[in-house]
Amino acid sequence: MPPLRREDALFSWFEKLHGPEWGSVLDSGTGDHSLGWLASLSPRALTAVTVEAWRMAGLAQVAPHARVLLGQWTDPLLLAGETFDVVLSDYVIGAIDGHAPYFQYGYLERIRPHVGDRLYLVGLEPPPRDGSVLDEVCRVRDAAILLAGHRCYREYPREVVLRWVERAGFDVIDSAAFPNRLGERFVNGQLDVAVRKLPLFRDRAVADSFARHIEELRQRALAQVPQVWGADWVIAAKVRR
Ligand SMILES: C[S@@+](CC[C@H](N)C(=O)[O-])C[C@H]1O[C@@H](n2cnc3c(N)ncnc32)[C@H](O)[C@@H]1O
Image (cartoon, rainbow, N blue to C red):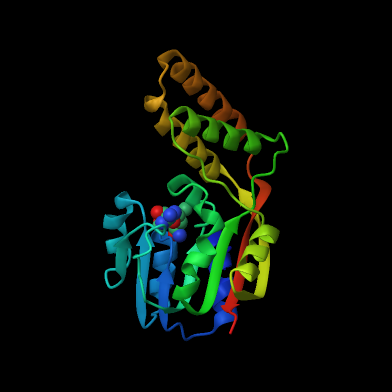
């Protein structure tokens, strides 16, 4: 049997815990992976939210029967009065700072009224600041994002999010960490983010030397992967009655 892809390992963890009946489901920060997985579970109804317009066309293809909404969780009218048996937040908490700075601290309270029974969370541990080449890849990516005038993702440790979950009115059922084995796809993916930011740099000389630095780092990093570095986490919780 081929090895499980990472996201399959995380999603399988929820499937084992949950069982076969999914009822109505909300994908609260959707993307091709999470929406594709949820659609494959044949829920009674599937709703998904993203704040990024560029995702919409692809999402319609991934799950033609899902209701996909372009919306912002800071908007109190988004999905007002609607409740779902299951809410999945797949890499949403770490992404919020890029779209609604500081709202991550109130996000779980915001979605609490929409959770009928279960809340399933997926996140990334903050990258280890260990001086490794993969640490360098992440720092160069973030430097490029900042020099382009954009905001970086901000990831949170599982232990912190577990406390937020309890405080927001949920009981934790279980949680787990999955160490990441990262290779070429990761290195190229992160450094390509940096490359896409270069045209937005104010100073062309900085952009040109940054471009050379990215390609030098890419060669160095590609020669050192795969590596086990960092971890994803999953949390399953239910509404406290
Ligand atoms: C990193 S992506 C999630 C990945 C996705 N689950 C997948 O399968 O690839 C974060 C998602 O959360 C959404 N998001 C982040 N902040 C948001 C906010 N304040 N309001 C609504 N959606 C938000 C983004 O638009 C995006 O759809």
